[in-house]
Length: 211
Image 1 (cartoon, rainbow, N blue to C red):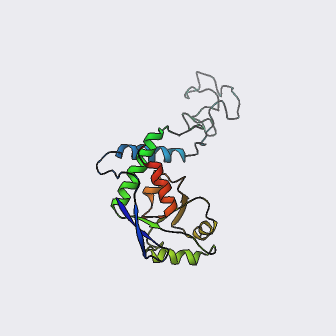
Image 2 (cartoon, rainbow, N blue to C red):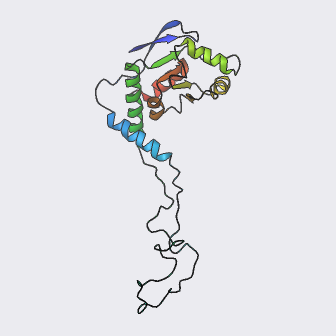
Image 3 (cartoon, rainbow, N blue to C red):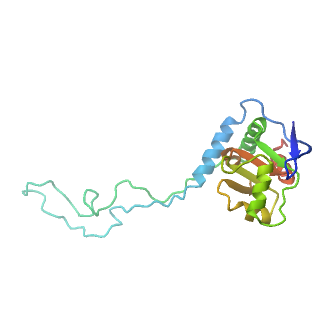
């Protein structure tokens, strides 16, 4: 499969061969689901914590005698039935992370990229560089590529450290920036359009190519 290569002004700059075999059937759908669920689970802080009966302050003295008062029997005031008492079955700190194998992550990323390529949601730019860290200049590049951050969410993928692009893009609310080394399945799926530098696209396709 070939994809059109563009320059920063939106003009055609040739074709680029996709280095991996695009998935045409339903293979990889479950892998995508598993990887996205694992990614979102890993984002949870897991720090919610409530105090049990043993954690709250208060005496363990029985509030009134067991019989003869006409009231329900009761024990200490730290009981969950009392205001200020402990919480029954409340949350405690925990780790929500799920384990996903490397081959599953690779398959999920290849499946996600395959679907975005088939929907023409991927744009590859020959050289995505800026002379200065200017948001206005970066917006003009996006406009030349037919993208409007006011209407579309855009995932920009560059090769390694690109300070000017990073500084220019961080002021735009609906534009996210990552590198070819760290791009994941969730990044591929969450945005309306994907903009790659040529070097970043080649790096990503090498990551997901069949060995």
